[in-house]
Image (cartoon, rainbow, N blue to C red):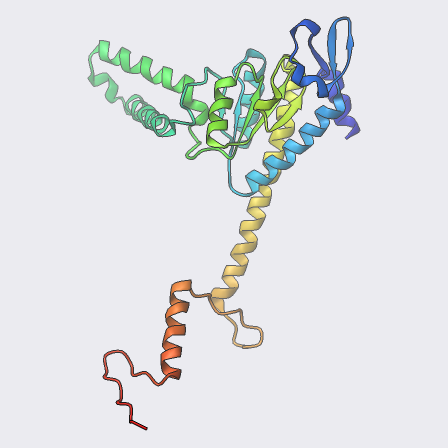
Length: 289
């Protein structure tokens, strides 16, 4: 913890915006003001970072993905490198409107990208005219530039990580409309209401952004390892049930029936207790007393 706090301070994550360019809703995260520049409370930064790591670890362990969004120049390099290592979706180019709310169309564009890439790899694109070949190549490059980071995102993410609230406002609004939790690195000029888990800090420092993204990606790795351990444990348990046990005392419990089959079984048992005839046979006449 001490080393992390030292790294954050050395990266300049505690330097906020000028006093004249601040959002009053960030007042709880500001420690003091020096030379007309706000100084962010590093304790609040560490608190938000640890809370975000715990939340991301839980989400990934449950089998959900985390989408990282950072289209500003200072965040592009580290997000692309870190997210490629942990195999998580990311957006570092312009956020396309409807990336989350119109996810079906995004998947269709990705299928179009696969078609164009197959044409390039197989060489079939040379069968077209030079003009058509040029148009298809430009289309392929454009889709690749905008959507390459979300190619592995086959479903909506469980959480959204954004760097700079003001710049990624459209992405945060889409996530809010869909009920997707948001984790944001927020400077003193941002609005913390757009973040479910705010991490107050300098969103213009490349070192600060890299440390935050690195810690969040470490949480992704830990959550994925927990997911693998859980899958291995459940697989061992299922394997024991398949093999069975000759000893009835140590044999696993019988497979649970569905509620519908249990209801039918209880109905048949009640009919047998009441002396009802089996289905398809006439009931025995009741003698008069």
